[in-house]
Amino acid sequence: MRRGMIMAAAFALLASCGRHDAARTAAEGGDDVAHVIAATLPAAPDETAACNLRASTFWHAGETILQVFADYEGVTCADAAMRLFIVDEEGRVLYRFEAPARAFDVQLGDGPDGNDAMRNAVRAVLVGWIDPEGRAMPSTTALAPWPEGAPAPFEAGEEDFPFAPAQDLDRASYLALRAADRPMWCFMSARTTMTCAAYEAASGRVRDVGTQESEG
Image (cartoon, rainbow, N blue to C red):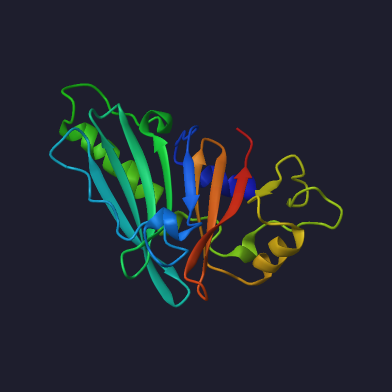
């Protein structure tokens, strides 16, 4: 069921200390559009240093094509951060996530810092992290139902692993979002946690949807 899909998407990531942001105010992005976090995508990591790399892919969010970027950046290969950005067609950042690279349990191997084997390991993790073919829940219609009277959404037989909606989603707004069939991007944000965000074409916004836990 859904827990199996989450574990299949995990590819051994252990992001226990992640942070994610959907755009909230114009002030955050320095832009006059409230759904924009930043006017431009940060510069790519300096790939001449350590294991610094950037990977990217396209997200076909309905009729809109967004880009998803994954960065690995740090002073050393082990002491680095991993970041995920969702960017609109004008290059503006609509969503971001960040976690320490150590939490992802990247198997770097031995040898001089930044050697080919280390960089190849990092590249594989970044590409897998944002692989559009590996997404378990591409639409909000795949969200768990929220039975009337229940404290949270859950799949039948999986009451111990409810979906945790974003704080601003009550039952009515959650069910409306689920029925609206919005494009959704879900990614592993912890060893047994998947975080989901949805694209709203009318506003051009990527909003937090919530997180789905799975058995470890």
